[in-house]
Image (cartoon, rainbow, N blue to C red; front, side):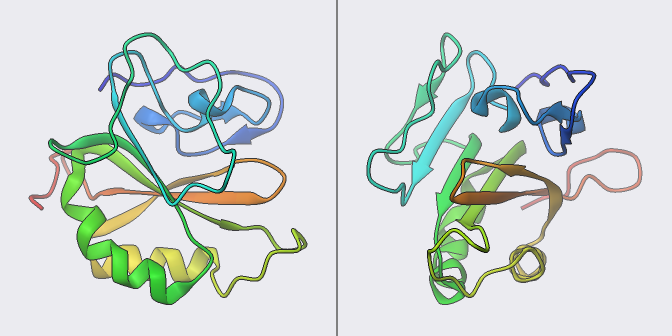
Length: 157
């Protein structure tokens, strides 16, 4: 997966591919680090959710059959997150990212998740914080990535 190019000006959202900051007004696919030719999985998506105008060549997979560049997992419960992490983590490509999305405070949706909980669960599975992004008016997300070590080498899964 190649890195997304940062966008200057405006509010930034950390966590796009390559660690670049991306403007909060950028298209969702760009904020999530989706680039042409990458593999993508959407898991637990809310009714009617879609990522508009995906770049050319993005392969959206319903079942992981190879490491994934970008996975976006929606949940509102810590127990669900903990139960699914053992299934999701092995499919994160060495330089890929696993986005965990949960309802924003004030969205009207009940949740027991927070950035701190997502971070802690990621660490339990060898994944570290790789940034955050707003998905829409209801959902926020945190990106979890494999730790790259002191010299940029990706830690083995």
